[in-house]
Image (cartoon, rainbow, N blue to C red; front, side):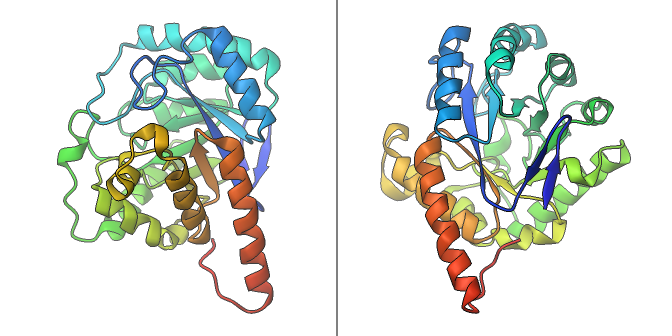
Length: 287
C-alpha cells in the first residue's frame, strides 16, 4: 500500500515513524520546548537523524480541555518554524491543524500533509483545500472538541462506530476530490475515548482494515498509558513502545511519536518477528 503526497510517495511496506514537533506553549508533554524556530529546527534535525520518515508540526494543542487559538495566532506560531524547516529538512512535513486557512498557508509554503484531528468536520473548506493542493491527509476520529470530547465516550459498538464515522469522513474527502491514495486514517487514541476504550481499540485495530487505507496511531505518552502504569508523561516511554508494537501487530502502519529512535528500533524487531511468523504459516492481523 502507498500514500501519495504532493511531491512524494510513501510506501507502507515497512512501518513509518512520524516525529512530533509541538510548537505550542500548552501541549501535555512538551509544551513550550520548541516554540522558537531555532529550537524547533534542532529538534527536527535530531528526529530526522533518528530515522523519522516524516514530521508533524502542531501549533495548537488538541489535548483534552485545550483552549482554541485564533487562525492568526496559529499562523504566527507555525509559519516561521515551517519556513526554516523546509530549508533544511528532507522528509515530508505534516501540519496538525483543523483550520483550512492555516492548512492553505502551510501548503503554499511547502508542507506535504494535513493532519486533521476533527476528521475534516471542523472547517467546511478543509477538504476542498487539501484537494486543491493534492496533499496527503490524515483523517482522525474524534467526537466534539477538545473542550467536550471526553464527555462523548458513549459507544454501543466501539470499533463499529469508529469505523463507520471514519468511513463518513473518507467519503466526504473523496466527494471533494481527494484521492483514496492520499488518505490515511487514524482511530484517535485519547480523543473522545476512555482509557479502557483506548486499550480495546489497540486490540481490535485490525477491524479498520475494511477501510482499505493505511492506519496511523498516536499513542505517545498519553494518559491511557499512565492509567495502566501509574506514570507521568515523562516516564511513559516504555508504555508508548509497547502500544506501538501492539498496534503494528494489529495492522497500524504509521506511528506518531515523540521518541523516534526507540520506537523505530522496537518496530524493526516487531517487523522481523512478524515476517518470520508469516513465513512459517503463523497468522497475524496485518493490513
